[in-house]
Picture 1: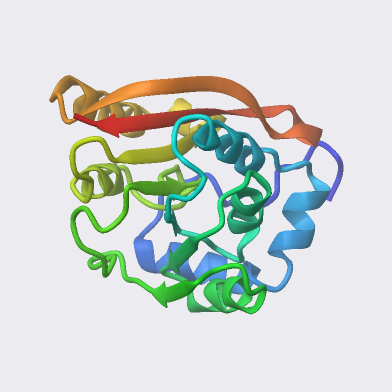
Picture 2: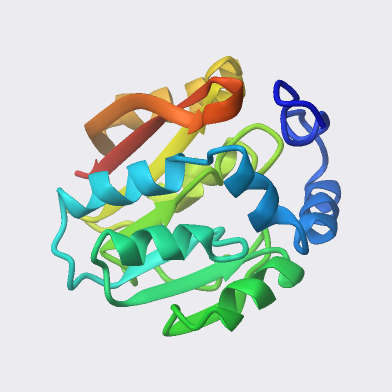
Length: 204
């Protein structure tokens, strides 16, 4: 892998959900080392932005928590109580082992296994994106919010170029379900110059 290579050439391409789970299951052992080496900055950026809009005592659901890198960033931003879920059991095992989450569970694409209003804040860091969770996941997450609840999410560059993901976000805003209270472009993978938008939505 050269400096200008992306992490995985097949990562940012549409695929069936089962195939995506297999990709991440296979990646679980080396994921942390690979993304940290490349300068993965979105978790830190999103966590700091979230800390500016909600109380640090709020229990945050780290949706699609992966190996727990996002949880580490949330803890570093000052959040004390985290729950985590992921569809890939191999990744979730890594997240659970670091001991930062009060509760973890394996969810499925069909059933995230938490109810509407269960969390005042949901962080989906790099989750609803091309090659990971499909665009319709955004509407599902918004549907789990009560009035005033927060969804913090990110779109990387490949996702920002995909019309289906842009439409998913635009539709939720245009419908009046949510309002954008923060949006900022910044570093995603530093060594390849890739950026991402950190986006915070509040349910109306």
